[in-house]
Image (tube, rainbow, N blue to C red; front, side, top):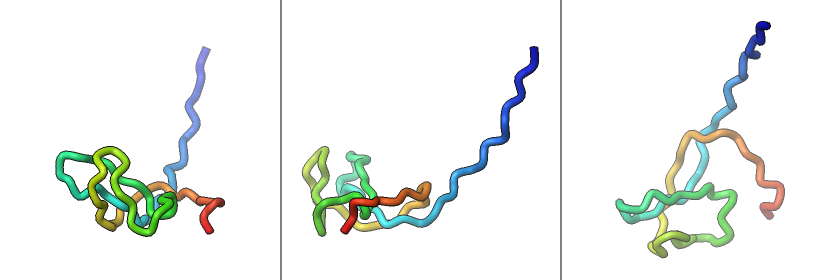
Length: 65
């Protein structure tokens, strides 16, 4: 019996605004669209976060106001 795999389309990516933790030991980051505060603090180590960008798959936040 032979099963063929379908070609999976690559996910569309775009440059996305993110918040990244300022501590080098902490690898936490979050998308800007999904943060609840204007300047969030790190949910893991409570340090301040720095704005940056990353190439990420496209997501739409339908709850963002």
